[in-house]
Length: 163
Image (cartoon, rainbow, N blue to C red):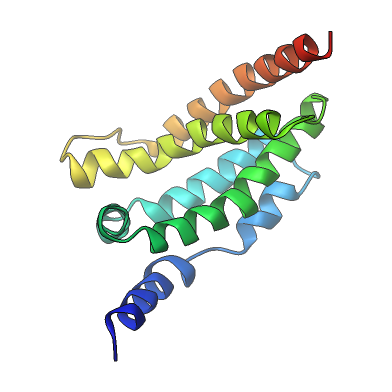
């Protein structure tokens, strides 16, 4: 009946219905090491986003109508990024952030790791560039780099602010 209804239907079909509710469970399940949880989640998430129609619709929506992207990104931030930040603090005994800036720092570092997965799709479907054949291997490397560097950076940053 209207353009708004059509856009909402596209959002529902392309983004919401394909969202795997198990992702939140996987990320929060402390019976598995954090590395294993992150790899499992990001490999499955890659299957969700690394499709031509998904990447193109997401990019186009961001250029023409922020509502779809904002809705999706808010969901991602709340249900995934915040959980990853919490689990990172728990696993590496990093002090909780004492300010909104500290929370923002954590989320930005999670974004940096997470966006690399989506960027494979941008390279392939937007730039028409080649991407690695073994995406899972590259996801594991990104997780390892994240877990090797981010806890150290956050811990040092929080200790510096407490002195």
